[in-house]
Figure 1 (tube, each protein chain N blue to C red):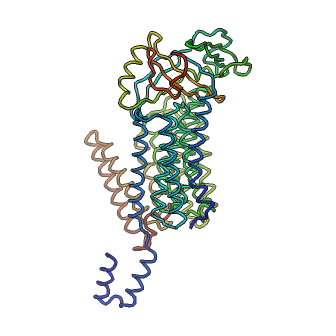
Figure 2 (tube, rainbow over the protein chains, first blue to last red):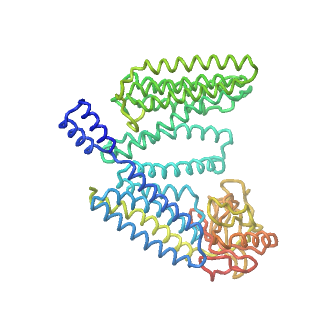
Figure 3 (cartoon, rainbow over the protein chains, first blue to last red):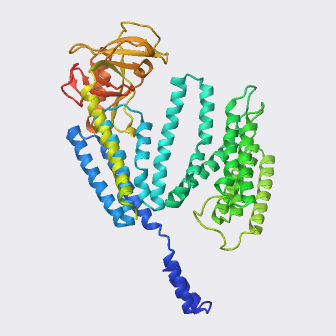
Length: 388
Length: 172
């Protein structure tokens, strides 16, 4: 409707003729990427799935356990048949909705089996099984909201798996809590990498581009979050003994992986875009590593400056890739960080004044740089169009 | 449009996982020896994880004590008791264990277990567990799989069935 109004106005003002308006309208109709409807479908179906899990958790006493299992199996089969029918008929919305309900129903069913038979298997095992067994199901669906749910299931399994690995390292392997913490640090640092690697799988990119994109976006989001958190190490003082240890070096190796893999993962990226991403990762790791390298007092200002530099490098990468919204997001984060600096320096009148002046100058410089950035009007790739 | 085989795999795989879980639990429940332990209460129910009682197995005095319970290579060799009796155990090396009804890593015996109960009975059962666990009035019948997975077949509080997979299981 909005496009139709705009076309009518442009036509009335003599900017385009009727034939051009018709061609634009046809082009937009053919390339429309509906989001609202699939999102509503995913929300509705997701709510049903969540409701089923909750009903299972209530554990009705009135129905014997084996009857519950039989009813559950019958309902699963009916849902599976309906999903298959919708997929084979090519009904996209129905496939999305039914696959999402079956996805949630499978989790509820696994919980029900655990509940009825009182099986004490660890949560990570069930979650991993569920995420793996329902992956082909959610790959049938093609909408972004369902792909986000698919990734969410795997994230849950990943988080539960980490907790189990941590427990296993301490309890069964018998390594010291210090070494276990270092191992966990490395695991956490490496967590985004499988997501990026999965997102770059050729077959996934070809057959399920939406899922591939969501996976890669989660991976880069993880890099951005971990990088920003890495800078925070400077908020606390470091005593005479290193607090982390070998984990620092190992996270350096982990950080080198995306830097070295970038040309293979994204040969289409420009040299400056790759350089900017590598710089951001380098800043984050170096800040984190230096924070543990020598005894020092707490220095929040180092955290603030390096975090701003980290976001600036990511903003640069976004600009180099033509991702206007990402560029705006990162520059917005820089502004937000500066605001936090204002609050942090509130102390004496002198430090408050210096902080405000420096922050204000930095903000103005940022606005000036933003205005001068070579981003062409409307030339960006828009929302969700890949990552930095 | 997706091919028939791909669609079939996609919808049947989740079903297969559920069915495998049911079959494995039924099999364990039917075949594994009944090992009855006294139990002791652990933490209150965790509402975020549903409604369940938490408890630990109270391991009886071992007949043989070849290793420390904290040693990762130390196992409990459990032998089912006579009808109405609790389990008999020996602490032995996992690698060199004699024939047992079930072999469980000793450290795993200390892990709290969950027993799912109906939402409306949870507070009452929790109170009962707290009241009777101290004087040996709470017992659990467990099945232990070869990989150490524990399945609680039944729970009795002062001789009363608190909900069981197999209500006729012995050990009250």
